[in-house]
Image (cartoon, rainbow, N blue to C red; front, side):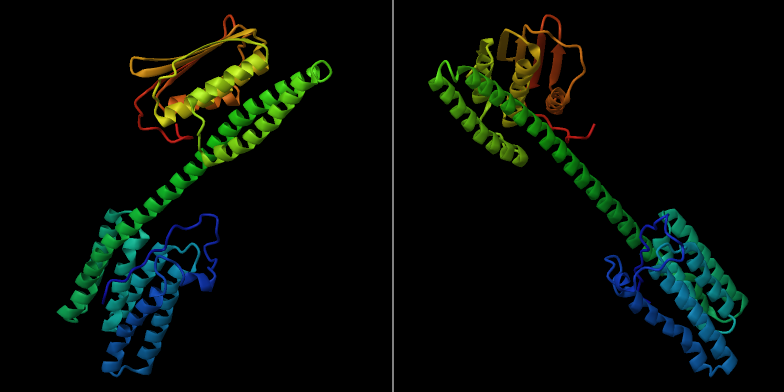
Length: 388
């Protein structure tokens, strides 16, 4: 008999033990498909003995009752939502023990039980112990009944051979199931990380842009009577910034960053000056940064400057960017009120990005606020976002 492939899968603990699966889904299962109907054909060997021995009607009726019982045990493993595999397999062995005295073909039940056992236990050790027990039971009973060596082979040794081969396939199936679970978990974590990235990026993009729009709108409102031409210029810039914001939101969702650090620092300087701050910018324009580090520093400049404009009430702001000892150091310092409050979403997202690249993030709030970010210039193996 060829090795029967069977895998009951993982039962649902909350389901009723006697609840049936929809019949049209059983044979679509990717683990076994239509194979249950194929393997049941081997039950025909159980009727070879009564045919050749011209068994009496009583024996035939007993054999038919045994076959029907086996069919319920067999298909129950496939059709029940949470089958008790030990009960079903044990029932098959019991059928073999009960019918061996009247039908030598009862060894078929031992073979079925041995073929399915490796897929119904959780470890290879349990499968080996179970197969050895089945073999001993079949061999001992055949020997006690004095029915020859071939029945001993079919009831004792052959089930061990079949079950031993299926143990390999059962281990492979369990490994594949664990791999599928791991892939599903990785996919879930990737989706969570991507949602977090989009949330952080949208916070940085919209927070900064809306702050600039608010500043320019307020300035235009103040200038509309005194200097209409300047007010019109500010309104046109508001329109341009709004269009740019739409493009940046799309880029954030796609994960792209095209403007670069130099352009971001120039925009930050303009924003601070529009807000009425004195700006000191010491940024080395010749820095060559890896794309990931440049993106993180660009977002840090944007978030840091937005916080200065929104919350600091500062009159001066200093931006300092330099390369030293194989790393890049960014410092944003203002002379505002400072704050001892915890980190908001923007600062938390900034810290996560920096630490993901193996960098350091420091925030000091004495005599204003100072943000210091240090990133290694060599790109490390980044930890996935959302994974600690």
